[in-house]
Image (cartoon, rainbow over all chains, first blue to last red; front, side, top):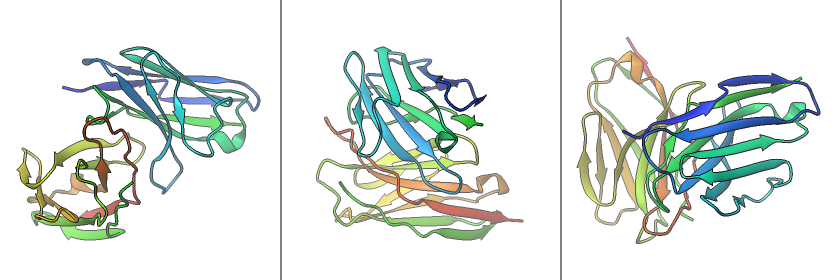
Length: 115
Length: 111
């Protein structure tokens, strides 16, 4: 199998606080992990790509100082939304791939609500 | 980066075969074609992947013509639980992480 988990599944926080979302590949080692954001009734938008042990590559328009990504091991990547604001409220989804260019397997997503 | 075009929505009835076609005119030589299914408030689920001709697994078939400028996902005998958004992605392949989600096709299966 290729199972990817995310934690937490949903989080509510106050404006100005930071939130960390974890993404784990449970039964395989993931050289590459991806973070997406999805607003209601829209498609997934790629935020960044990270390879284990190196800095993440961010998509144009995504602030790297606001969305901190760490891919410290072959099974774990984290996304930290720093100083979250209501406009950051969204559905955040990660995916993991065994290697560069290989099939992505997605986590269940994390619903973030910033009040 | 290959752009994909799919119908925005499709309706079907239980028990019918559903074919969803995706256009990707500028697909690159090394690009693969991958289809995902997404239910509301869930992450996308991998359905099938192919490079050329036909691929079949336990849930779907993928037909890719020789020019690879389009592909068709075929879902046999759909049920109500197949109501979802279906995404066609083009990319991947050796040393290439570049894939983007298009708008997807919202399939509604009616009783």
